[in-house]
Image (cartoon, rainbow, N blue to C red; front, side, top):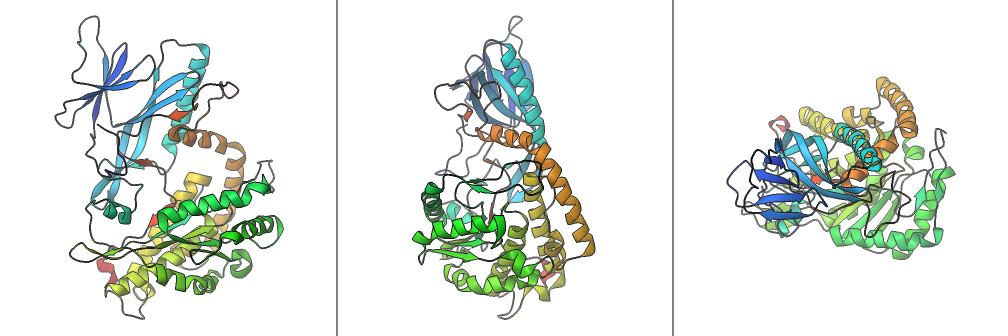
Length: 460
């Protein structure tokens, strides 16, 4: 029942656990096969250990029993410790033949001896946050494979999978310290903070990207002027000292060049990065399972919230990569395009539009703006009206609901600070999630994208 790690990306984890709630401990018993060990969690302090048998049961020790589907870990707060478990799940699909599940039920099990007023308040707060987390899109996990690793990384680690071409791109906020304080205005102002640290913060971020992906071309889609322009200038100035053959920076004023309807002008951006994409290729295995190509660089895209402009742009880049992969496999001719196959073209657009809507809904509470272009290849009157409605909904959610959702995500990732203890100094790291996930790698909707080719009959 060891937690998964990078050196062993596909451990065989138990899919169902019987939770025994004894007076002094919680015991998790695998029920999907024979097991020699059981996980025991102390109800006093949250400590964990493996035991060879269940505690004795009798008239004086009659524990309640329930089925759970995974242990996320133990969260340690100033007011006490809590064991987070997955109480419900839905199978939503598969990834390379491995079942993928969505978390639909969570519970925090208290691990402390007393029940003070502060702890009761915290537990009520937890219940509300877990309810919010359950309603969020994107809490996925697998018992059989690590969803947080690329196929290229899994190959390097020796994992087995189908020989499909793969290419990865990433999105992320401007990589220096800046803030946008919610103040009930429609577009709160931007402020760069700790300006003197901007270059250092940015350099660390890009060196981290290089370790993971190799070379990086950074595409900045924000406006050249106004409040966004100030962020663009800071980005440009901060990245200039580290620009090289391995780190490129491309600024593309999306709103100025494309406006609200001329998204076909993104071809101007592609012309600037085409050589980079061809140089750094994509991951590909031959029929014998030997690596014949390797992706040696990635595209990092940002706008302000990295949703709408970013999604349209990444859809375009992903389409170009997909076409080159299909041409390499001989599915498309040398000068052929996906657009020549209407059914497949429609499937690609819907897939990417749904993907963008999922990320946007998780982050902003609404589907992505400009989604009609991604979904249909053109702007529509209904799409523009939907954008207006979604923009108004985002304004409300951003000002009145996002705080709770952020706390829910922080809780699941071990970064949560309880409101009853935010001014309390405690040793260690308050809010740390101490134990790796025992149900399989859990991830929110990832902001990195693998484009794996699955040839459909609709292409022909």
